[in-house]
Image (cartoon, rainbow, N blue to C red):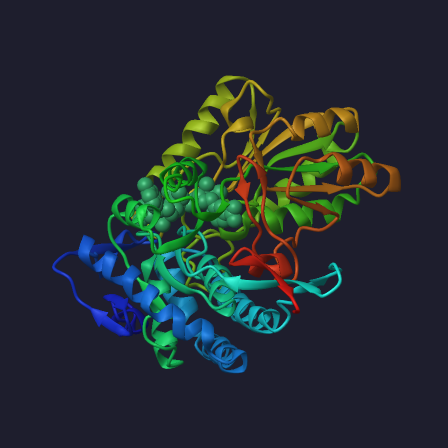
Length: 483
Ligand code: NAP
């Protein structure tokens, strides 16, 4: 176990206090399958207590002078930056991603806190033309207690992009991080404590996801649920929230298409694909999962791609030259293997990879070879099922219309990408791809300034950008008559 993890608090943080429990659960390092820590599992009463505490803290937090509230957020950003190396190490050990990626994720969390601290100062209301002697105003007010539930693939970033706008807008929060990666969350809460965030403003509970989800969704005190995770769990939370009619943001699954047109800059397209696909070992909701390549450029594209994929170094994320770490769990390997077998049985060609990695450094962890499959088509599971791993399925097309139609043939609608030069082709792609985000000759689509989110079964709501903070406020209309 590393020093950073040894020294980390492992308990619940409720009302500014670290609270022990009677039940502790193992956390595993996916690179070694070793137990690296045990974290507290909240009782039902402790979850209720955390919600009540957040409710009690709301009045004070929302009424603080804005300058004072945003000073806390800037302090948290400073602490995230100062502790980036330590937090990155914790993240890599519990989640597996290369340490460089983990560090960038922590730094982008600091950016989220800074951006939202500034954005809180620009939550402008409106004055609307009104009848004589009246004033029509719109004011944005915080919603109250926010229940946040986050996944394991970005153990830090998914938390900071929710908590920063929620807190900036004047809400209080109860967080439930993924049971696979609670340590990064605990490390962030230690920084909240160091920043002297007022008691009860941010609370963390870990434990049975079903019980905590039910406690959040059925509570009358929780006014908003913000969730990032799979589509089925998002739907469960949506259904459970019907009775209390909560405000919700659901950032769910994705199955991004990546189109390479006949006029594309092939080298740029290959580089873009490598960056977007192999980040976090393909375990990313916006990872390209269906690569549509024009028949006239496929040979060149595939040759360049194969060379780069075979040069990737798979290993423990703590080693500096590792490009790709392990998958999160054994069942992630099983899912990928099943998709590959199903595709090859139906006629796909394995160009490289396709197997679990074995040998000294790999035997205990969940390592899989970076893989390319050619001749993929719509009869195969991999065409429709979200792939959360290092597999690149290639599909050939002849016309752009055909490529767009196949790209839209998905229940998901989160991210999409296309490489093309012709202006008309670019416009056709940008207009017709049914996705919340479109990257054209670019793959960086997640920034503090730009809206992140999906359509269709990828959910609703936007994170980041000036729209992100609006998910955590309600618009109040005030009609004043001057007598
Ligand atoms: P998941 O199984 O849906 O879990 C996400 C979170 O929900 C975890 O904290 C999990 O807790 C919790 N959870 C599980 N069952 C629950 C229940 N019945 N009630 C309440 N909470 C429950 O997803 P995951 O495997 O962690 O993450 C991968 C998925 O997230 C993929 O589908 C990916 O596309 C999606 N994702 C989307 C975005 C986006 O922005 N759209 C970003 C990243 C990931 P436990 O882990 O403790 O069970």
